[in-house]
Length: 333
Image 1 (cartoon, rainbow, N blue to C red):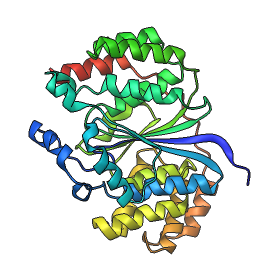
Image 2: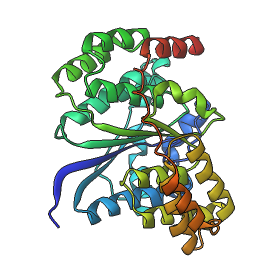
Image 3: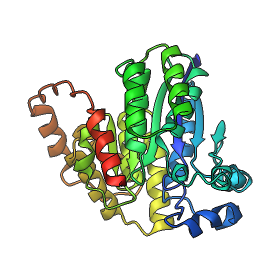
Image 4: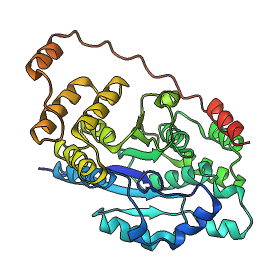
């Protein structure tokens, strides 16, 4: 098999996406640098998913890279790298935010300002990749990942011009030096529709429907089995990889085959996973005992073949970033 030199890139947020971190208070935030790798807990199923994405890509002759972008301080770097090692995760780089330095400088507001920081780091990282590189982004609903990732995808695609980006970042009250850096980076990037999907792990009781404003590119998921199933449909993860995520959820987090089946039905109902792909997964995972046996699979397959093709979905409207930034700043006041 000839290797595909165009890399497949998976960019992960760290806290609330990979790790079940607690930083709701200043006290909890200050405690994070002193936690050991053994104290840190990965989100259920996420380690199996990250391992499976790399294995699938390499097995198909595809170059692959896994990066982490964190708003946590660099002082936790050693513990994080050790945690990734314990979980069997190979990675190609981690970027941290120097929170303690900002705290010592008295910049308390910037401790939670993530839009300028993350967007700038993403744009810098994009410059190091070939224009054809495809990306999948993974975040959570705790702070601003849906906005940051969507804005990044549209800047890279050329759908948000540098001048508009400057206006949006000013409205988001990003520091002037970061605005100038982001605009400079955006202007230098070759345009490419590079971001295939954005997956948002729902850590808060966020109704998934509230994230429809970001369009079909963004997929909210209640657990990493739903994320894995959608990545299977995207041909970024093998059925065996989905099975490993399901198995980890059952063996380590108390999921049952019925609960996983309900999760699969939910993500199909919300329109993020095509029903025929869900049927295929049901059959394969049922053989492994990870899902209940599908009811009357032959009838289901006949019905799928006989049903008229679904009409093509209309083009998604552009994301209304001005309204979203305004709403976010209004909620923060």
